[in-house]
Length: 312
Image 1 (cartoon, rainbow, N blue to C red):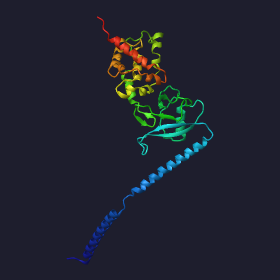
Image 2 (image 1 turned 60 degrees about the vertical axis):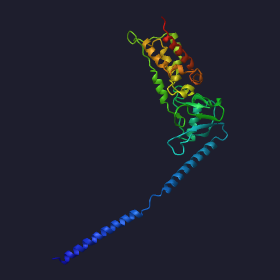
Image 3 (image 1 turned 120 degrees about the vertical axis):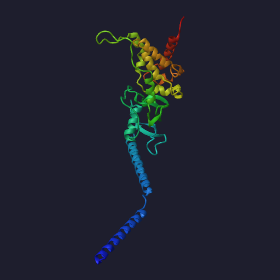
Image 4 (image 1 turned 45 degrees about the vertical axis):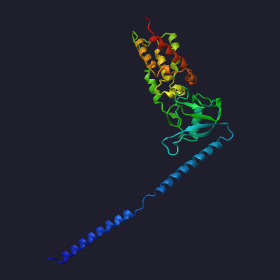
């Protein structure tokens, strides 16, 4: 038997259920009717930000140009490339006008351009004294060290590019991994047969032998020679002038053990070793340390012939 109170309760429950259904329906309707994010707004904002950056850069360039008024300047055309930034994936050249003073180098000019025009300009440098070899570049069509090349010795506009025949990472920076791999392949470390006798006695070397290998020890691993070599450009497995020069430095050292020297000679005699060199002298011409690379390669060829001669 139902009472009035029970009837009222059932009515309230039904009403609540209807309310929940209505609310759910309204929520669904709200979700359906909600507008999708306006992609064009975001695109417009990005374009506005990009335009503002362009205007700011132009203003900085105008200010820099005004500050250079009346000064002697040089014009640089610098290779630019950044695969990670939209709009900069395609290689191009940017032009910079920098103030000139006596004794100024290409590296000095690049640093000025980076500090006053475009902070994203990327290049390697360290010692600025032609010792580290990190700033080897392709300047006006030739491999040179940026810190050693005087602006006064160059024709304008001065064209600055990354080293040829190497993968460009960004702007003037190239990937040196392959170059280092080739250097490592010749096992560039000293390995004598006999250790010196006595307490802390040095491994002695004659003056004549030191003079013989002296130039080969001047290599600063800049990669200019490898970049200039036409053989290396067409044969990715070729050891290259720098690596062969490093092998020469140890193979010709009188302190090197005979067995170790023979092992090293076998490395440089292989298919992609000394016999690939065609004596074009391009590596010798661009070496910033004046190492006679081609001569060293030819001497290793002669050593290879002698080591393979047999007399009965």
